[in-house]
Amino acid sequence: MRVLFLPNYAGSNPYQRQLARALEERGVEVSMAGPPRRNPAPIVWGWLRHGRPRVVHLHWTHEYLGGADNTPGPLVRARFIGQLLLLRAFGVRLVWTVHNLGSHEGARDPTEMAVHRRLVELSSAVICHCQAAAEAVTRAYALTPELQERLHVVPHGSYLGVYRNTISRTEARNRLKLPLDARVLLFVGAVRPYKGLEDLLAAFRRLGQPGLRLIVAGRPRRPESAVSIAAAATADPRVSLHMDFVPADQLQVMLNAADVVVLPFRDILTSGSMILAMSFGRAIVAPSMGCLPDILPPGGGVLYDPDDPEALERALRTALDSDLNAMGARNLERARELDWGPIAAATEALYRER
Image (cartoon, rainbow, N blue to C red; front, side):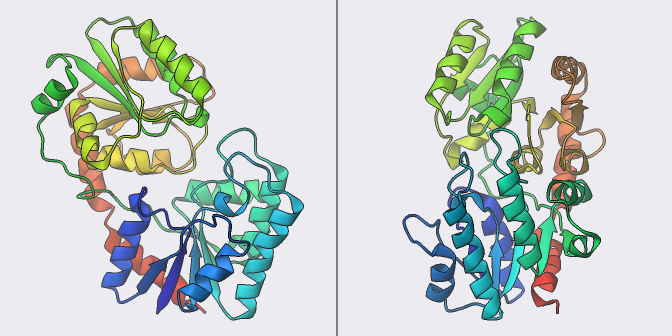
């Protein structure tokens, strides 16, 4: 069986690489086509260029709908849906993994939600990473009971072994010039409004404990974000900024230097960042939102109410009063359970289902 993944984010996101590798171990031939760039029909073109595979597995849609921050116009919507209809006419089986309900920035756009509902209608199977995600998809896209039958829960696999993990906590802190006896919090990843970094900086400042340190590692998507974050960090010498893309070989430095990874999302469905932190055995503070309560095991960290403006600060205080090493060990144990083998088997079954 041949399968085409769209769009190809394997260079920057290990999810597709890990899933493809596990599928290939089962005899499934996986190819990937890049983002659309200026191609007027990138989905059909990718399908033709890769030998007309029987299954097209769509992951992220925003590349085909005008970008992450844009509402898809009528022409963009028609081009996207038209390509899917053409593939269906050629007998292609469409599978979609819902990584996000829609664009992360701003409120849910009704136009985008309508396009995604149509995508569910055209898909033979729709993969959600947890039951909470399936319920959120049902609500957001106003799915009928018939369409809900196309939703299937297949968990997100771990990132164990994906990144180098060879340096000690001491070496990592020495490289970052951090005190060995400090309690270190980490925010790592692209800096975008939905990530809630400003909320974390404000909550961290209110903690007021001189022995704490906060590492912020990631490139801001918007210049104005970089300015406000730099200003907040300058006002607090306990904050260490690394405002650029974090190369794969540097992730182990950041993660092994930290006691706890903080994920202050304002909007999220599922989180590879949480799974990455768990794969490094780190304790976690995150909102009780989307799939996060299903991913994080009991005793692996502190979840907080995202609707309570003071909850993040309380969650940080609770975590810092807890056994963070025990939390990290529990998360590493859970990461080992998220094996890609059964995930690939469940995904392949959806490819072959009649």
